[in-house]
Length: 387
Image (cartoon, rainbow, N blue to C red; front, top):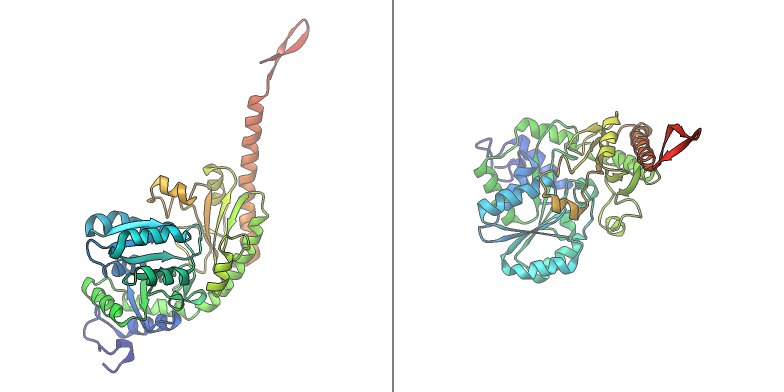
């Protein structure tokens, strides 16, 4: 019980606690500026543990542009099988959030927030949401999924959040060799409930995975700085490329919530979303022609990854909801790694140029199909237009 890694509980059974997991949990708590951290076998398991704090008949108010796996879990498991109501709302619209909050009354027990969101990178003012929650629904908990920023670039507990969730699989581990999640809090009662769920459900990480994730955490600051530098340069490059119609990156002044990100975060992160020209065919050409960026659904590793959310990570989101969020087939999400920035830019340039060439060829074919055909043959010795 004297071992600080046991949080005063000692060690009796490895599912309940073990020294390696305890070391990792304490390290993440320190990075997230939290008193407590509870580790789980995946980010989804960590999300599930937070939902276990609620009871049937209560309600979750979730940001609309949420990770596809979380949205699917809320819609297809939490609501129909656990009897917990789910409402999705744009947290950038204060009136909409307040209306939903007041409509549900005391039933609303959890506000679920991602900032920046996945994949459209909307940034929400955590302080403002926290203040609103405490004023109009003091019994509700505010949980922030901080995966995209990592503890290095953002600490939601310092902005009024009650709970912070991470998919450790991503930036905290950072090497694409661990699947894990954590929940952090400063509240002792919440911590005790999470520990109970962790032990009772048993969705715990192995000691070896904790060892690997702890290894990754030690270089988090170096990786985040390097990846963010690359991301900023790539975002600026994409803004000027003829193959791109729109770039979304919190570090760009063109981002609608750039000022909030500057105030709330310690850096802008390494996730970029952009829309390529054309349609689904052109986005497929971009992805097929990438050589340094790997086509993959994950993110946050030292390697750079690219994906099309509408067909991959967010395919489970209903079509009408994707349309409302702007997640169409031309949207490409980049997780920028720490490779040579010049190599990454050249890779994107080559892939985008291939899409531009394809689009130009299609446009020429369309134009030619509208032109009158000239047939060889003659009327009175000359050619004629066949309309």
